[in-house]
Image (cartoon, rainbow, N blue to C red; front, side):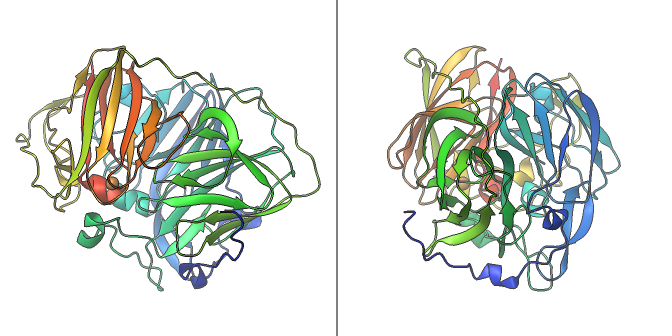
Length: 464
Ligand SMILES: [Cu+2]
């Protein structure tokens, strides 16, 4: 695949970049701050930022796209969300095995954080890795407007030549900087409504300066609500060392299908390269990488053997389409993990139809405050094997909260056994995953194509 060198610029990219982002003077890099063992506040609010030619009303944490929060494994996190938006929000720490009350899912794990309110997330991430964080209500709009950041938990001793976060995200903007509808019936019923402007770190085809030409860790995060990218690097050499932040026995990167919510960490050696998306008629250049003639230090890569799932409980999780909404109960008090009760159903979420199902049931975003029964209930410590059967003609990146899956086998897209929190299931594919239900609480499982999630492809399970 990497011999296809005639990569083209996407039509969307011809809108052109307007260099008003802080990353523009920073070699295409995002602003980073260390947060381990200290308390910080993130204020969610609207800010006008020029991504294309015209400033657009983004929703951001602390005014600039994509804060990168770094900490060392073993340190504690304390982040207070201050909601300066006009609607309620929350923070979900995507991929982190958090205590249930910190998972940021309105109604299922916490009261939504209303405008003017604050909520403090406190936990110590149990695993090192590359994570991101985003809201979990009206996700299609809040994520679509840019409300997200990266959380990097470093596993000492890490000594790379450089360590760079690359966030892939498109924007649904017209030429005047106005947002197009985040959810459309057509998009929701198909592969989703794609962005018109493709960016990495909030910029169109940025030139990313690397600090060394060997042992550079690139942490790629697909934060787009919709688009599956097939990532390749043209030039130099790249080895995959982690999937969704979980170490794997290193292997050469050819291409990797990175669906929404998925991450891929590679070690890059080289002085010039292009980051490409091959999931198109012609490869699309996402970013250019360049490095000075400086060697970098290497770091150990840890791998964890998969658990033995021979005595696991088996369940087929069917991904389906095209039925009516589930028989949802009338609004009734919801008891949160901390014992508080939500008495009133607040249905800010979307008023869209139901297209998609999990196990034959549809739970659309408009009914977020009405909990259907759990898909299944597990005893703490139980081993589970899910045979995820996609009966539809679309791809679905399936995300499980609070747990790390081991991807054991797949019927179409071959991939090594690896751990992940989001697994891409291709049309009519069956993917078998296992996990140990070791984190008590109520946990979401849903498609991370957010229009699919909001129109029914979500559910939850309980670990008691
Ligand atoms: Cu989907």
